[in-house]
Image 1 (cartoon, one colour):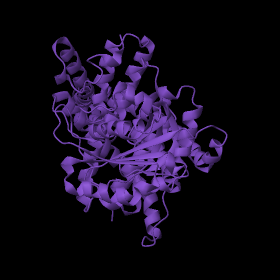
Image 2: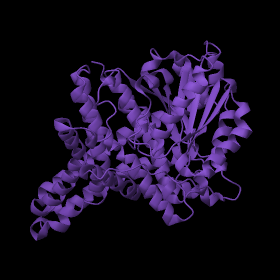
Image 3: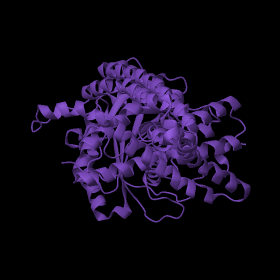
Length: 510
């Protein structure tokens, strides 16, 4: 049986199922939060009732985290070198060696209430790329629920830029459609289906010749992006079983972002760089590119969930019975760091954005449930992916909290008897030394971050550059309060069945 034609293929949450399937899926939704909270509660329990055991566990955990940090830092360094090399390559010249005139790039830009300036910068960046604009089809997808202002932005962009591209289409996604969750997935799917009928079919463009780039509306394409993407599409063994993932640089407005926002934005970029070196753990994220033929065969992005950007990969993975992967491009696109009119509003928005991103935990029950139902995927493939995904969501919500907040609990809660032991004296020393060694990786982070910054604005002095280096001492704070805690928040909501909606990150530029 073809899995993509089953009732389970586009499930969004347990409430959409019935009978034993609903019970199983609901149990899988509970699992991420249960594991994370269970670990934290266990550390607190042991610190009170068995402080020595807790102390040994924390020391072992710190050692594990240190080794993991070194391991990830090596991947970060390797990808840094790979990106620098790829940015130096003339991909347009590389394409001259390949037949590529038949390839059409369909770029979808869904937006909500973003302003004209932001949308225009993204569209203009497409014109500045080193690729034939007549082979580009731009779809500007507004939301009816955003009001007349959004549609006015679409009209202005269309009037100014439509003739610059081979094809241009402005769409409006209707509001309040039954079965849809208001968000990027529903809008993008609606827009691309209209583009199929109006652009591809009317112009007799073969689906197999089209690459779709689903971009967040603040995405600015680097000059050689589409040339690089086309080259990889034409040279990969089976391009219809591969999605293509660039590295998101959150630096469009980085010089005007508050320090906490800069650190969080840089950390997000670094994590995606690390994942590029581990393609077996890589899923599509945010702005990404997919063959249209593959998308069309599965009905595009899901319209009933929040994390459509990563879910589309798992849709394709299950539809191809495990024979589908993500190809890391190690080439950047730039996007906005999270900035609001005030510092405290920025803090709130950063938290909400990361809670939405970490709500990607909703993919875990989908993956595991899909593995149960799809018998064609090899057992060891299922096993390895399951372990990687469970560990990933567990470590995201627990590791920083254990390391930076709970490491002192045995001393605080262990009582006089524990504090008389040599272990109580050595615990903070060992923990501190391990953390010092692990935090040395921040020096490399600062160096890498500076090399990818856009040119410093004239109204920013040298101290602004110094602050860009000094800011990395805040990482222990940011990975707890803008990583682990929103991750735990998201998993708790999923565990309790308090499902989240799609929160649109407000875009603000000074």
